[in-house]
Structures are given as C-alpha cells and as structure tokens.
Amino acid sequence: MKFAYDGGFIIYCINGRRRLFLFLKNPDGWLDIPKGHLEKGEGYNDAAIREAYEETGLVVHPEHFFSYTTSYWFVEKKSKVKKTLRIFMARVPCDSKITISDEHSGYEWLDFDDAIRKISFRDMKAALSAANEYIDRVAMMHDLNEEYRALPGISKGWALSYRFVPGEGALNARVMIVGQAPGRDEDSSARPFVGRSGELLNELIKIAGLDRHEVYITSVVQFFPPGNRAPREPEIRRCLPFLLKQVEIINPEIIVMLGSVSAGALYDKVKVLEKHGSVVEMKGRKYFITLHPAAAIRLRKHILIIKEDFKKLRTILKTA
Ligand code: URA
Image (tube, rainbow, N blue to C red; front, top):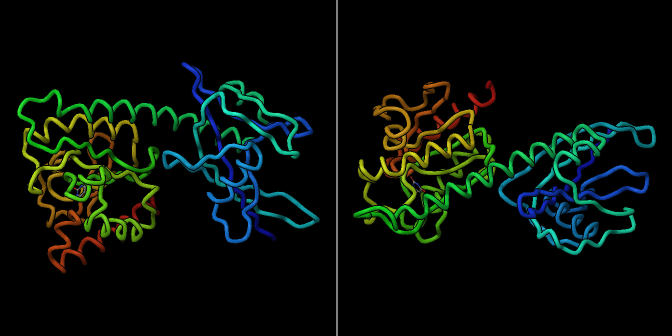
C-alpha cells in the first residue's frame, strides 16, 4: 500500500449577495478545485498555495482557520494508494485574473447549488458544503465582532481599554476555550492569549491532543481591564451577550472554562479548585472546569493540576 498527500484550495468570491466558487475544468469534463501533491519538504498549506498559483495564477493563503481533510483510496499501477487531501479556503475579488495551466481546459465560477449539481465526487461535495457553511459563520462572526468592537463608544462610563481583542480560531471548533479578559500583551497585539498565559495555554492545548488553530479561544470580557484587574460584574454583564452569541455561532462540543470568572459567567459560581477537571452539563451543553493559566503560573502545584486537567480533556475528546 502507498500513501499520497495533496493540498488544495476552495477559492471563492462575493459579488453583491452572490457567493461564487472557482472550479477548474479537466479535459475530460469534470470539475475540480486547484490541488496537487506535496513536494519534498512541503506541508499541506505550502503545496496548496503553490498549486493554486500554478493552476490559477492566484496568490492565495489559507484564511479563517478553515481546513477540511478527506481520505480516499484508488489503484495506481496495480497498487492501492491511500490519498489524504487537505483543503483550505481563500477569498479573492470576483474580477481576479485567472490564468489556467495546461492541465485544465477552462474554469468556471459557480454558486453553491450549481457547484453541488455539477461536481462529481462525493468528498468534494462534502468539502464544498463544509466550506459554504463555514463562510456563513465567518460572516456572522464578523458582524458580531463589529458590534462588540463599537461597545466602548456607546457605553456610559467605559472603564476598560478601547481596543477590542477578538476571539481567534476555527469557527467550527469542537473545543471553545474561554478565559477571563485580555492582559497587557493581548491589549497591545489585539490577539487573545499571546502573553505568558498564552504560552502555557498553547502547551495545554497540545496536551489535550489539539493544535491552537483547531480550537476557538476567547474571553468573557474582550477589552483589557486597566492595571490587569479582574473585570467587574457590570462589565461582565455588558459583554456576556457577545460571548453567548459566539457560543451559538461555533456550537462547540465542549466549552473549557478557564478560571472562576469564566465558570461564573457561563455556568455557575463554582469553587474551581474543588471542581476542576470535571465536565458539567447545562441546557444540552457540556462545560469543562479548570484553572486559569495565569493562576496556574503563580503556583507550581497548580501547573501540575491544570496539566492533569488537560490530559483528562484529551480522554474526554477521544471518547466523545
Ligand atoms: N487571559 C485571558 O483570560 N484572556 C486573554 O485573552 C489573555 C489572557
């Protein structure tokens, strides 16, 4: 048995209310996305970027943390080959100049329904459906973030930073991680968990068997509280509806609540040091209680506790 690996791109554009996807025509008539083999030393995304350029002339990069992996078997020179294909997505302007290679006989921009009707392979239909649904989430999250970002301007007596720190990660994540509020590093970079707590969180995510780009990371309050104080009750109340909308958009299998502010806002005022490592359910949603990485950094024994919790999370995810 042999193994083969391909990277590819679902390239789309938005023209008014129409969302169109780019397909390449093979000489024998069927439609495909730009894709091809990983060359020596390439990762999936390198191959996808190179193939998209060679087959369409477009310079694209993976966007919005989307990736879709599929595997299938075929027979080549009498041996069975298992191919794994990883697909990314990128948006380009609808009037982009497309320069196809000799491999293809033309290209078409198709809307979702047309594309589903015209493409032949079941895997490709599934990948396109996943991408189309993901783009809906991108649009919903974009609108929500714009509304949230404007909050300081319309709120009386705003005492938090004016810089909004959006959530980050896959919008179809199985795991959503919710912290307390951005710290100084997050405030200056406008990205969640990039400081010391972020370094520990990245390590914990790996312990849970995941990569940072596979999860969605956000906080109860998404503006830095000056002096690194804890967010106040009225601030939490003001921001909570935005967190709950993020939960609706992502619809994760499990929400990891980092520390008591997160647990208190989403679930209940629990004693985190007593309940850590456990899964609780509320209104059909699963929540995992653990410490906040910043609290764990302060005490060596808490680092051990939080690492054990993320090991448990790994087992929970495997058996789910
Ligand atoms: N701590 C949090 O709770 N959230 C962040 O975004 C960063 C640090």
